[in-house]
Amino acid sequence: MATGCNWNGDTENTGATTLYTDDYQQTVEVPVSPTRIVSTSPAVTEIIYALGAEKLLVGRTDFCVYPPEAESIESIGGISNLNVEKIVSLKPDLVISGSMIPRKGSLQLEKMGVPIVCVIEKQNFEGLYENISKIGQLVGREQAADSLNRQLRKQAAEVAEEMRLKNQQAEPKSVYYVVGFGPSGNFTAGGNSFINEIISIAGGRNVAADITGWSYSLEALMQADPDYIMIRREDSATFCTTPPYNRLTAIKKNHIIAIESGTIDLQVPRNIDAIRFISQQLSR
Image (cartoon, rainbow, N blue to C red; front, side, top):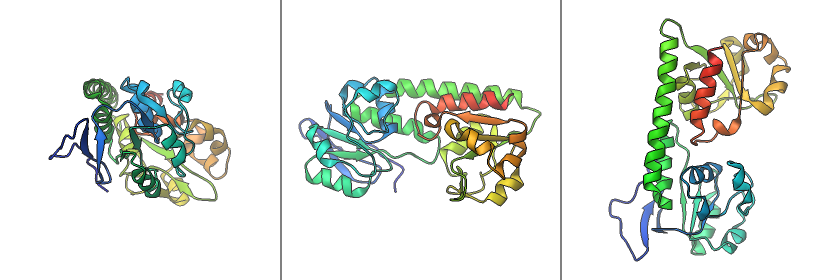
């Protein structure tokens, strides 16, 4: 899987189209100025709105619910089981997908003559800016993307500097992000994830920074006994009352960072909100 998704060095203009090489290294002929876009990724949808290009959207998934106005866009259904017929009925001149779209669905759309490109979430935080730039190129909002990236970089740097000044003499607080828990296993964001970098920029130390992937043992969690537990808001109450998690020091001290999942699970501009919120909670 490639991490780059840039305009092809041998870009070939054919009327109102150009060749684009996406994150799966598929070269696709795309419109230079698309007018009907279907997004099959919540992150893509959110970025399109952030770039002020929402009027180009004619379709989105059931999971594309931010900003709330996105729900007024016609839905094409789920993500993992693309409704190809529904997408085609919307007559898009471009489909932008994300990491969760199965190759089978992409191939079906390609066979029907619908250009589809993939912009995947990256493992590093810098990938946020990269994806904003890529989507800006695809939807004809390059200047808006550059402006948004400058703004986000400035905000992230300001939060990081605030935390650096506050913690000059102190060790960063240890943080464990609960992605999944219970009988089916314990899951968190490892060191090779952009979430790990979000925690670090916010002034924390991810206790799972030494692992790759998402699986984490219960024994390791109990032994690490982190200073703070970060968890999706909707899961917070259950986690805090479930043994043996309720024996963690962070639970006993009410050091819980209950976070809006969309601000951290997706690689979107709201990641800056997550950084700011986490940094505030770590300063309690």
